[in-house]
Image (cartoon, rainbow, N blue to C red; front, side, top):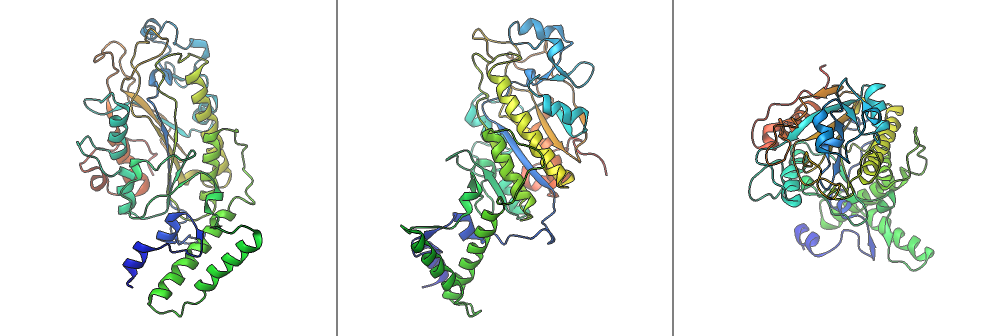
Amino acid sequence: MIRRDFLAQSSLLGFGASVPTFLGQSALAARTADQPGAKDTILVVVQLTGGNDGLNTVIPFKNETYYKIRPTLAIKKDEVKKLTDDLGFHPAMHELTKLYTDDSAVCVVQGVGYPNPNQSHFRSMDIWHAASTAENLTDGWLGRTLKAQPAPAFHLAAGNETSPLALTGAPVRVPSVASLDDFKLKTAAASGADGVAQKGVITGVADTSSGGNGLLDFVSRTQMNTYASSEKLAALGKNYTPKMPYPNTALANRLKLAAQLIDGGIGARIFYVALDGFDTHSGQGGATGAHADLWRQVSEGVSAFYRDLAGRGHKDRLCIMTFSEFGRRAHENGSKGTDHGSGAPMLLLGGKVKPGIVGEHPSLTKLEDGNLVHSTDFRRVYAAVLEQWLGVDSKSVLGAQFKPVEVFAKK
């Protein structure tokens, strides 16, 4: 039997045992903190699923038109978390405001979108994931990035959430993990003694390698690397004490998992997490309500994550980027919500971002079919992240040349 046939017909870990698929495929080759690549820059993408209302996220509180077109949803001037003389965050974004004002760690890119915006959740999300408006989209911008610069990456999943299109196309399948327990070697044993015995068989087979190139040697080496990698990853959280308390939310728990993996020094450079619920057609709320609750989760979770890693010396390695598939319309609707729109803000956070506001806030009077008009193509933000943060040629990933937006501090 040749190696290819063996891989096609069987599991690398037989004997009733299993580990996450990606460990068997890549054996992870986890780096230690003093090895090349272990301290490279890191990108954490936070997807706001459903279409975040940008107008109630970055608020033009001195613009009277804002209050006229949103009689029930507008945030009162004295409740806005002021960033500049005329712009401010939603009041639920208190912790992010402190990162903006006290730490100079937040960059707000206004009016981000793409030409001829699509109002379908699925199609628009695919466009953002693929960084393309082509008819057929089969791989994602982060998958292509990992192909150009291979490194471990993780999708931090909520339950059985599948890996996003953005990560498709990587040379090795990016795993979707929900906790460090996902990395534990699992056996089919019915008792503890049986489990120990099965693990003994696994390590015993791994020890049979003679250093040759035969099939058994290939299985032994791969199996041992897989087992060692899974044990190392599963152990990362045992002695981890955050430098900053995390709120008890699903998003914060997944960001804490990212912090453990980052601080573990395994060389992972891309992490992806999503929070659903931003499709606020009705009952959106203003200073309080559904939209406020979502942004409180994001604000508190992301801020705890940033401060935890900053306390561990990683703040200059870290860039957190938020995006949503589209914004909402300028006018509120009859159900005290907002409908699908465009032209929304993106946030970038980190020790090396260019702090402040980038670009002009979309006009509230010059609308297109009720939509805010975008001024910055989202691929210009991607281009900056690729070239200036991850060190990857953006044209090879995006398929065309986009001028990077100035979102990082000049060296």
